[in-house]
Length: 178
Image (cartoon, rainbow, N blue to C red; front, side, top):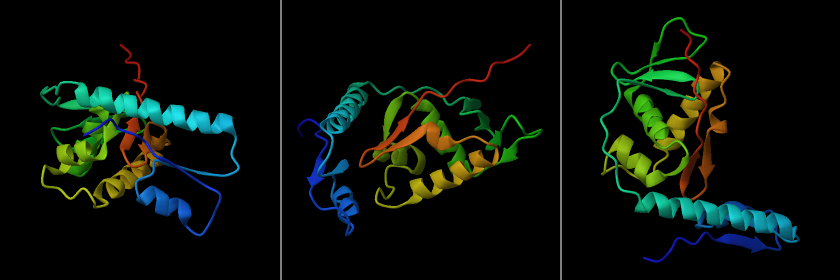
């Protein structure tokens, strides 16, 4: 296979559901004429940066580290040992589905990088999982709602990269006090 090449659909026609059809057909972005050259260049540079990050991720050797008992991700402490999550405004941790804990762990492992959908699905649901299903989106929407209840916008840290997966930004860590 050749290098990753993001496709930007350029059309003179807006509306009639053309943008979703182009994106569903594999385009990574959609631009309607007339457009600003500076904006178009910015989109091209963004997609090329994403392509470069994907190439680096694909070339990086797999790291098999043991899972920690607990970790912090975007302001919450998640315990894999008992599938619980605790936000700063909570006195006690609450139980979550094991898939939620696994999903958050994979996002946590991917901070500062692009997480491809196929990699995420394999790590959370296994090698035989259906990549065309909406399980990831459904779980992610539920997690966004859970974080939102605690005044944390998860979408700030996990941003979709259409046709690829998610860009997981490095989340700030809370400072521990003595």
